[in-house]
Image 1 (spheres, rainbow, N blue to C red):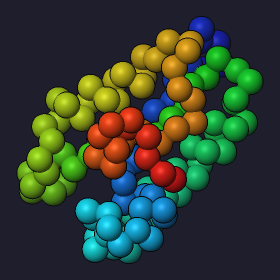
Image 2 (image 1 turned 90 degrees about the horizontal axis):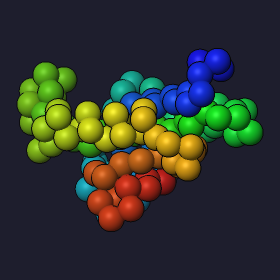
Image 3 (image 1 turned 90 degrees about the vertical axis):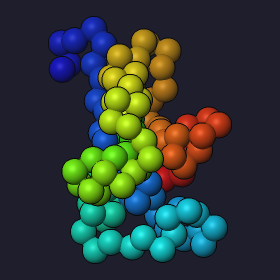
Image 4 (image 1 turned 45 degrees about the vertical axis):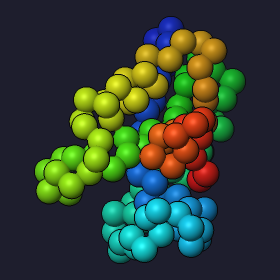
Length: 119
């Protein structure tokens, strides 16, 4: 990827990986505490922060994207978002131009206005 003119890393996360949100009793998913899924996403988020820092002075754009509660086999198609909408967010970050964001946690599920989610 270092040879690319526009290297992009998009890690797919979940709001369930946000420690900030898990401590906010007003968060819509506050009651959802999982033993493996959420902590694995927290670890992914931490790794993304490290990568973004290590590659901050390069052409890389490294972010995490939460596709939101999306209807998939994983949740028995219970989510309100469609997979095509979720995929659009991921593709948008995979194709950022040189002025695009770097080192952010993006989630329309957690912040519909700005998309910026707390780590």
